[in-house]
Image (cartoon, rainbow, N blue to C red; front, side):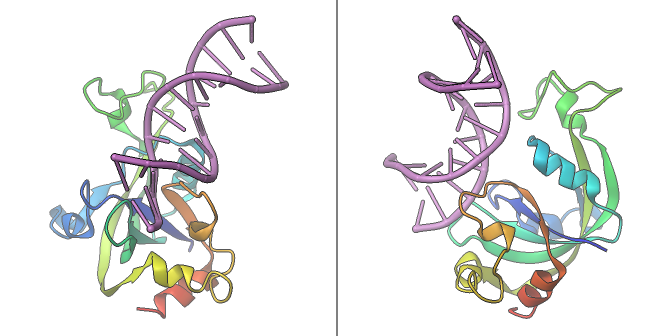
Length: 153
DNA sequence: GCCAACGTTGGC
DNA sequence: GCCAACGTTGGC
């Protein structure tokens, strides 16, 4: 089992939106960065991911999700009217992929980016989320980092 | 709203 | 292949 972190802007899709989704499941579409896409394709059913709120008043980890369907073609890339439309992606050889994720639970207490940063030089040294200039919306998380973060809740 | 960081595009 | 211009991300 591998561990990941998925960013979402809460004004676009929040942890509460996921909680109120049918079967508390959603497809994680719209990823248009090759490195992030490669991480999506490496995900396996049963993997866990932190749900992270970005670009908001208090960025941080707000929940835990499970991967419930492995990577498949992101259909929004084929839809001319979709903001994530990409004419370079074709149905036979898709450029972009998505996975399905299901809510495991919303954290009782969010873990803010500030809190994570406070441990950037100790318990969470090397955490990719804290790397300078990091903008990837899909990131792997080492198991020992996962455990240390989970212990902060 | 600002701006640093980074990815992509396209001319050459 | 280089690199300037441009667009996006995301913290603040």
